[in-house]
Amino acid sequence: MLLRCDYRESIAIELSRPDLSVVDAFFAIFGHRPGWMKAILILRNALAAPFGLEVSRSRDILSSDRQPAYSEGDSMLGWTVFVHTSDELIVGRDNAHLDFRVSILRNDPTGRARMVISTVCDAHNAFGVVYLKAVLPFHKRGFRWLITRARACGRL
Image (cartoon, rainbow, N blue to C red):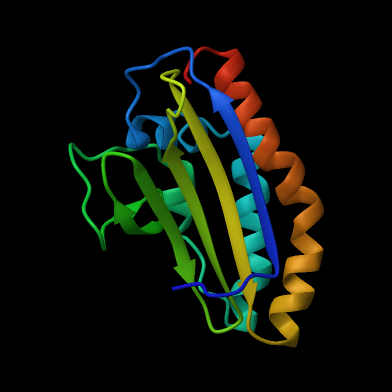
């Protein structure tokens, strides 16, 4: 469980598809990464793994396979499911250097279908801080781009 964080970001969106579940939203965003983004993730993993960072398998990055149902402890596109309720999905990974979480939260306070997509990262040591600083410029742009693209394509 993350109690503190070195980076956090959230984006709230109104859904054009109010029937979307949190798992549907996850796959609408992260199940449609373009080839260039998958290549960057695979390269990042090849560079980070020798330093002890646990990384997704290349086949998990390249795949958009979806199971019929998910429970805590399952894997979604290479990330561990930590929480799965009808209103929230939290996936991520714990590493010796850095822990991260991605949350997709259904938020309908005014009766409009809305979701808040968030990332939280917690660096544990100097390597984690350096790694986080190195990837944040790419993460910020990529995170927002994936969400904007999913919304523009009518998947959200």
